Length: 101
Image (tube, rainbow, N blue to C red; front, side, top):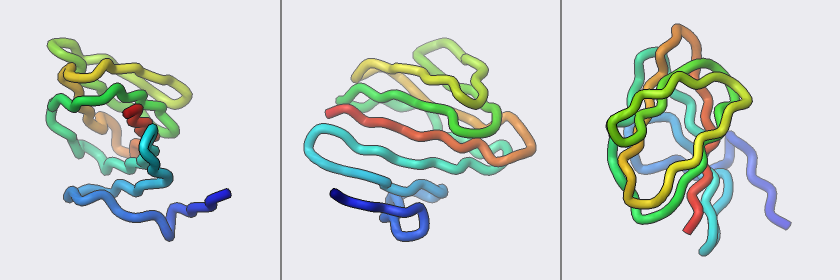
């Protein structure tokens, strides 16, 4: 068993509030907390990802689409596809990012 709290989780090496809640060779869970209007520019990665919206409202960028999302919504994105996100509200936008290796 491994227990990780938000306060003790390793921070991601980017200039935003992201915490690695769990990591192994198969999966990584990252908790993101984006401030109002904060954005992660579209990019691709060599792994599948699932975004699970925990709190707030935002936009998910997928290839040439922009999708509005809110709490209790998941979005699956295949590897090598463009993905990004933006907090489109005045509140914190919390997203659990599940990277599947």
